Image 1 (spheres, rainbow, N blue to C red):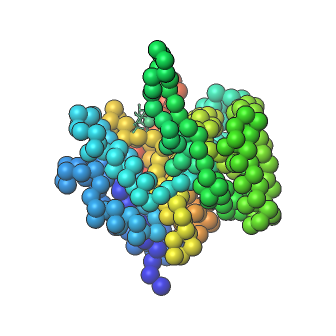
Image 2 (cartoon, protein in one colour):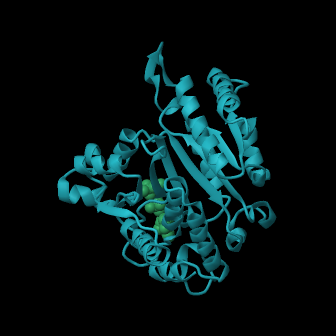
Length: 363
Ligand code: ATP
Ligand code: MG
């Protein structure tokens, strides 16, 4: 059987720097664990613009559609700030998300014990935290019509429309239940069914999908405002949270910051199942291209490494290997290794991107 295929789009700024450490891990997996990927690399963002005049070439788009998973670094940088909107580096990423129809955005909030004191919350509230927010990414109030700023009498009115169809809710619910089965089998769905019709439909459809196809998963419902409160009060009560585009935007940022630095946070965006039964998928660190530190060797590669671990778990069914990578990260942090973003003002000497990669490999 052919090896699973992985398309690497390292992009701009620190993207290629953090991706280099992932490529070493991929090499190690082949050499030491006999797990091989059919890896190809291509350009995205400013790097693609420089060569092709567009932030994502059609041929690259086609490769992304055909790959079992896409792993992306970061796009953008000051060099491209003055470009026309249509060819800005970020448009490359948006095109990938849109054409791959990646409607389900997974943002884990995982707190490594060694970093628990980094959180703004008390250590015992966050230590060992491991939850995932599943955010609907391609519909809801960000896309619903009518939208715009209109004149009404002699004043202006700003209008956005929260709109969800049953099928849009059902597919993201399915993706949350599938995820839960790979974890602790527990989903909490969040909406505002007390004040929004779209919330009532959301709650109904999530419950229907559950009762029909996932009765084994423990499902609860919560109003999103209460959810926000519960997330900062006692986040460990949750495992998988599924919610709409707008609430997900807010709740996932909130949850992410329970755990520390931007340099630690991975993400996955999933679409419809492919012929092999696995979803179309794009994995990327939450952070951007960090132009302020690009080229200095200061970038923390862990967010990108953990994004690769998510790919192992969710696209390649290699959960044990994913855990192996995550444990290695946990160990180097417990050993006290810190890149600059993980240090307080009097923190000692930080390690470089490559040194962090070395340590994770060794672990
Ligand atoms: P984007 O618009 O692409 O999301 P951004 O402006 O929101 O980018 P980032 O590029 O993520 O922001 O950078 C925000 C800050 O966090 C910067 O100071 C950057 O140096 C720092 N940072 C981001 N990622 C990392 C990382 N992997 N390691 C260390 N520092 C990082
Ligand atoms: Mg940003």
